[in-house]
Image (cartoon, rainbow, N blue to C red; front, side, top):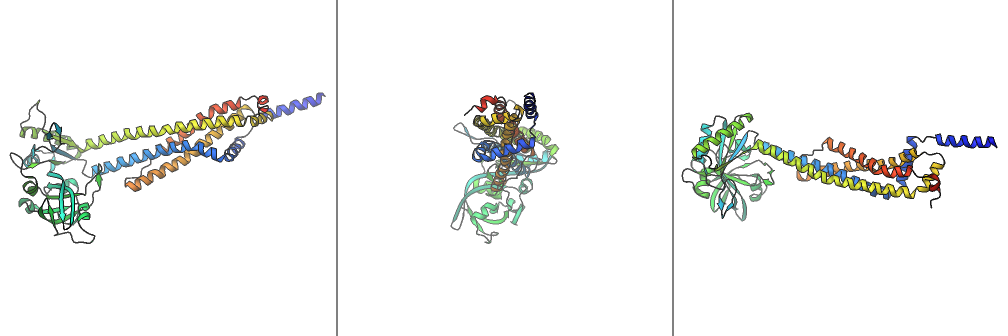
Length: 430
């Protein structure tokens, strides 16, 4: 009798001392999840959507930011724009450059008197100008420019020539087309150079076509026609300045990026002297520094990406709640199983590890799938909208880390509840 009791006690001690290995727990967890494939997949969905959203939004944001920076930098990091003041109609501002407060003579004075200025180019612009060729009628942007515009704005000639000094001096009716205008007015393979157009009812001869420059700020840089500034002033706009040729503004290229601030200071002082502006009178011109634009845009895009990414991260919280709900339900459904396992020697720690492993497996596998979907969405967006494909490694690392945290937190309480179940009560559970 004593021998049988001692054998029973020793067998119980051996059961209690039996330790389940991690590989066994992992196998059991995989089998349990695989046995409930639909429920497991639906539980993963929240994590997949959350991580895919975070990675895709971060990647798209950085790609758009990089594309915009590259477009702005094509103009040069040592370039600034000086625009005329804003005209007001009925108390409503018409936008910078709409008033007749700058003249071509101002631009020429800047070129001569500002030591930090390497090149200066004036322009006069009008939008929605009607252009007719044969039976084709389009609306485009018309820019009157001088000879320095291609150098400062990085405009390359694809076919023909840009107009020359004699064209500018004589105010000749010649036109240099953007690539989009060419596509709208001419068929493929059709001769362009020497063709005639009618711009605002006046005849112009095409002398050249520019290479494509793409878009900036959502606006095409190729849907434009360039004509001599003198012709634009005399034939299209009319000389509406009291003295000299009125312009909308001019571009200034500094001799060196480090000299841009010095050039801006010098331009401001010279224009104030020429326009007899003294404090507290406000300037009748606006200066935009492209370096400041890049810096501001980068900062704004960073905040927007962070904000939208945080909103997308909310779905991870939803996914975590989903995991917690399913694990709680799983504990209730498997109460009898937990009781049997404890009765045959499994410890509360073993039960805790198994349920926690199942939760972490769901979130980790969901995280891997989410990263794949996120990268795929980012690649698709970059291909469709033609901006750089950038996937920051930190976003992938953050995605995996968040998925692990979600798994641990969401599975922690259900696993703890399962570990604390009384085996006798669990065995009596129906």
